[in-house]
Length: 182
Image (cartoon, rainbow, N blue to C red; front, side, top):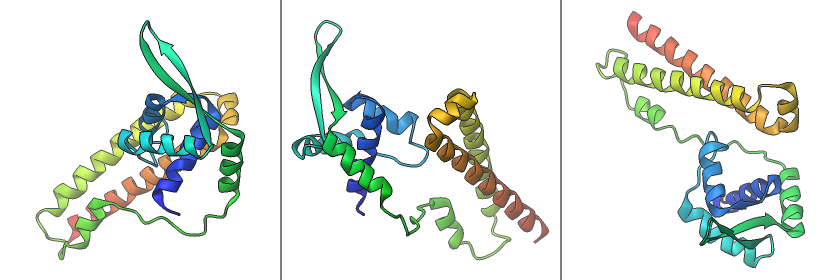
């Protein structure tokens, strides 16, 4: 499935949770689902227009403050149906990871490469910071059992991200130990 169509379903899912402006949708990619999917303003706004033309979403014009007019988007019954069908569709393939650090490692020929310790330590710090961020988000969003149950899928995604980062950290620590012995 093309990235654009996946983005369409992400937008439908976000609108199924609550009505949002284009700005709110863009912010959701930073605040909520940025841990596992990215999309920018230039992708979202043109897609909103196409989705509205297709009858998957619609909007109401609202006024914020005294003059600022905004479009408040909501999902239509056709959009809910499309979202439900997409969620039920099997996902049999793994997505390719685009990890630039791993790509760079591929081209390191020797454990004694002088660049390697710095690269590994830098990435270790990146992943330690990411773990701290994810733990803070989990506490903020899911501090109680009721909050976990109300948004269980989101909780599972955050839990997965934490496990992935902890595993990555452990792998980096092991790699550092290996090059220290070399």
